[in-house]
Structures are given as structure tokens and as C-alpha cells.
Image 1 (spheres, rainbow, N blue to C red):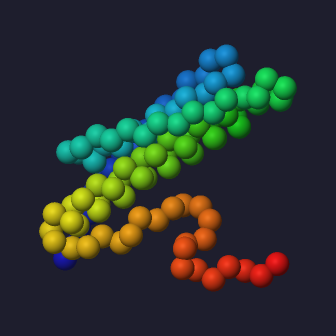
Image 2 (cartoon, helix red, strand yellow; image 1 turned 30 degrees about the vertical axis):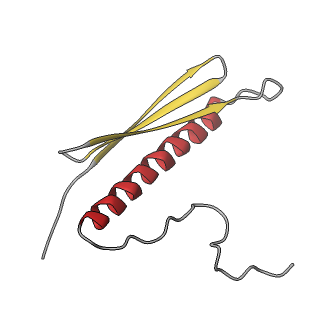
Length: 101
């Protein structure tokens, strides 16, 4: 079975007074999902807008990715399948061996 789709993702950034907000908007043709992220510049740091953009955008995309994973889990459950246990994007899985130091 061949299947092809094109999903559009737009990332929108806004900066004001040292705070950058981002929206990552996914449009798959039938559903629109929005992830949100924020980054604040420490008042003692040099303000570099590109870093705030990167942080806020990555947080918005991470939020969007989590929403997509939860939607897939719900769809799997609706079909009687057991979704994989929730994963985190950071750290070691609970059952993974830890490296020795």
C-alpha cells in the first residue's frame, strides 16, 4: 500500500521585552494543531534574539510533537491496540542500563 501526504508546519515567533513566544502550527488538511513555547532572556545576559528564537521554537515543536504522540496513542487505543508506554524525550528510560562513571 502506497500512501503519500503533505503536512504543513509553520513556526511563528514574536519577541517583546526579552521574552520570545513561538507557535508551531501543523495543518494536515483535516486537523490543525498548535504547539506553544516561550523563552526569556535573563536580564543579566546579553540579549541575542536568535537564541531566544531557537529555544522558543524548539519548545513549541516539542509541545506539538507531544500532542501528535498523544493523538496517535488515542487512535491506537480506539482500534483496540495497546499504545507503547509514554516516553520522555530526555534522560534514560526507566529500564535502560545506566552508564558507569
